[in-house]
Length: 502
Image (tube, rainbow, N blue to C red; front, side):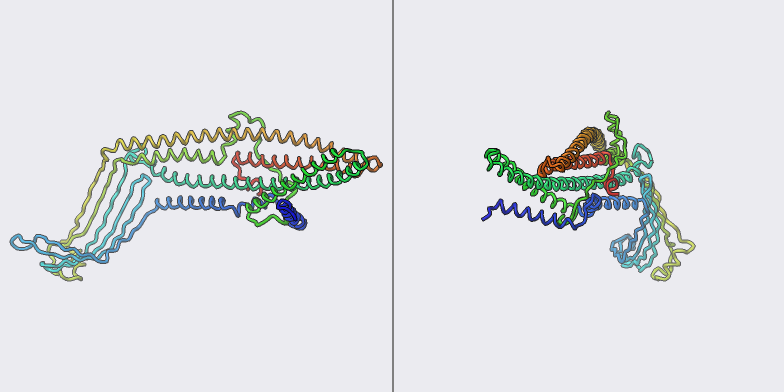
């Protein structure tokens, strides 16, 4: 009976064999398809896009606050009972006033952070009780202007109002930058998995070819041992080498299975079974000449478009705008108000007639009563609170400046490291290309020797396997160079989706 380890190996081999067999007729998975799949299926990307839409709606909502607001007030019924002077001999009488009415109130925020209001109200009253019944029409117009003073360092200015709007707009810009950062992150992770799958598949194929060759070498060595040409120790050493390659193959197959499943989930698929990977990675145009920028000034200059740095810059501006907005708190305010209302004549022959209540309001001896006033409100005992608030706001601004400076330094150092790695990878690629030329020449020479009957087919396969190993190494370095380009583009603040999969 097979033990558990043998059964697990057989299962992995079966899964991989089935995937490879189906891949022969399946579609080819490209970098563009990976990018499209991860953008469509990743929940983080969709959540980030929703946050952008929410910020956009909040900004639009803030803009609607600058538009006029019209409110309708309806009073279906009101009853007021009170005792008032009016009886003979200085006595009082009980009166009951019943009324209905409606009003319109128009409010407009001003660029000076003030509020302008105008109102129109109309009511109908019926008064009765111990006195005679009386109908009254009660129209009224009103106006008010409330204006904060000394906000933003101005007696009456627009700085506070504009700072409030800008703060909301900054929220939208921050959401967009964070969305780009989120999309770049998931694209980079997905493509790392893509490159890893390609490398692991090539490694599996190379190990399988190596094991096949070692098996034939072991069979040939067994014949040599029987003839006394090699020792038992040499044969055992070859067997140990073969076992080591088999262990490596099993481990690599298991790792490949795990990474393929992870990549499939990342791009919204159940499996990668039946799909081959694109043979060549697309060329990535960095779109910036990065030669000769190793100095601190050059490095910090080219990372200014990074969304992290952009977010820190907006945080500084937001802190400064908040200082301006909060400067209007606990400040004096000026209120101007006016109200006008027509009044009846003191002589009304038909007070108890509802119909007469209308023309009586426009009689010759009717009048208008009005109220006009100006109020200045000055907060007292708030100086200490205002001082604390100013300190908090200034400390927030200083923290934002420090975070921005630190982010710039981190990004510059990250770019320096990436450029150093890139030069190393390019040099390594050049060395591998030289090795490949040598290995191809070895294969050609060995083929010539085989054709002349001087070499063997087994020896030719050994040389070809060396060439294949170098080709796999070149594939790995090319993949690392591709991922290095993605990292550089991310640091530079580019949109990877537009750059890699336009």
